[in-house]
Length: 294
Ligand SMILES: [Fe+2]
Image (cartoon, rainbow, N blue to C red; front, side):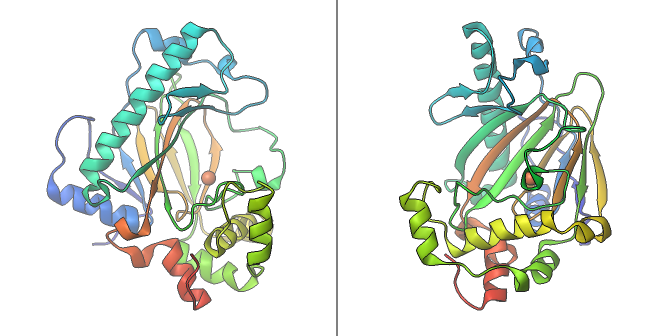
């Protein structure tokens, strides 16, 4: 079956069962590096409407984060009542996306680790990033300097809850294999000694593996190359309010151009749980490197 960079998956509600063929197609498209687009709104209660304001953000923060593991909320400026509402909305988003994930991606059952839930009320367009590394309007694959993933995948569920009819606009870049083939030859070598020192001095939360090193340098290399940014083929995507989209953000080259009021849930998936592990960034990079990277 031919696949588009953005594949529509006809799931309209969070509760109904998903047909086996549709789930198989969704998993195939997800692991092939497509963005799955679902006409699936996430409803806020009447009480929660008060959360649709960017004045909730504390200081210069760009998002409010919720940790499903200990039920804690960070990044919000408000009283206990507001925090209770945030905890309720984000906790429900986490539970909804997890239940949907296990219907769409049954092989991940028992293997998906919870990451953070995040709420991003602030407008992206016109924001001045701290540095070019933080500029998410440039195409990139996700990789985080302080949090090594040791080969685990970054599976992310997004939902546009914008109450003003505004879409969230993305650009989607070229397939991961093309990104990797283009940039890998110019990436600096991994230094195990430097990785140990960074873990010892707590610059990283655990040891940065060769995989984490190359992914981070891929992220930086893409963002730093302005010729690449202007010349590479891009597919624009506008996610309307009421749409959910699901993506392996370590694999799909993406840039966020505009939008506000979005929910996001991260999961970590081990490569061993994938249906098509050979398509994963880990295996693609290992092939280019000619050695194991974790
Ligand atoms: Fe990103």
